[in-house]
Length: 414
Image 1 (tube, rainbow, N blue to C red):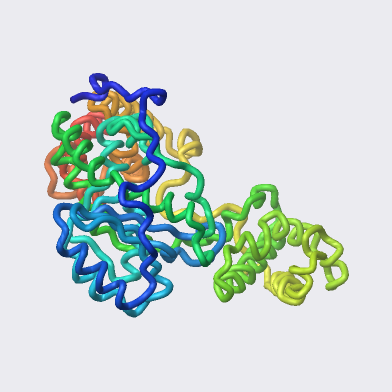
Image 2: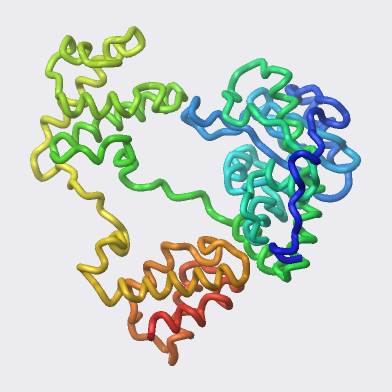
């Protein structure tokens, strides 16, 4: 069924999903309960619905503080991995060989892998929605559209490291996996009707096998308000304060913004207090929670002052690869023309096959191709073969290359 043929369930006629069918199960917090849950899940049938809750914005780590599992014939399991970190081997033995169903799998797989939990096969309902051309791909939106249920909202951004977890939070968590397998079946049928099942299989496998993301360089440059700074010395002060804050946040396992807000980092770097008294006169730094860290922040500013000019960071962030596209018309107008043609062609292709452009091909891959064309001399005799080889080297899947190589080859050589 195509995107245009799929009729959306009206919100007024959808059925509110307020409570799990079998009720909210007790949270698994003991080694014996882990073994019992593993046996139950192993005896179930079909794919395994999986979700995990973290404490983003509250904790430094991205660890899982609650894991939700559901399988036909086994019911729902709510697991507290913090309580039984060394007792999860039986669970891994039971569920790792199964197909897992997750929504936005790339968000949860890393924290589950930290627990030794890794799927042998994967179905990502969010990614399935993108490939199917759905305009809204949040879990609640897709469940309502395909199954006719309205999911309970309200606790996704909660501090899941809290203990004990409130009953209404656990109810919400259980509902996240309540209909996930049903959703998987509906989305599989949708993809099959659109002739996209093979595309989805390649995408799911790429997500399943993706290595952990590499740490981004110069993460301190993402400090809010840093764009207002025009001095390298002041920029060095931001960096030193950011690094001090990050070390303290990691040691305490607290989100960095809760240790010291970005606006305070920029304010201290710009005003450059020279004494603890001056520092404490600044907004936020005079508060009772900040006063005990005054020496840490002042030492960071002193380190920035002590740096030789040669060690100061550049004002512009160094980049690996092409410069920002808005500079291309001046620096490399031919590349800018190629990028314009490539984007137009990919937009038209995306509309034709009902797939978002960013899922057709990673935007960074397109930029690198357009900037570096013509590619260094290779054994490839044609533009299409050169483009295909470049895309393969960049990690594009077979279905992506098959669709985009012809239009990109034309854009490169027009």
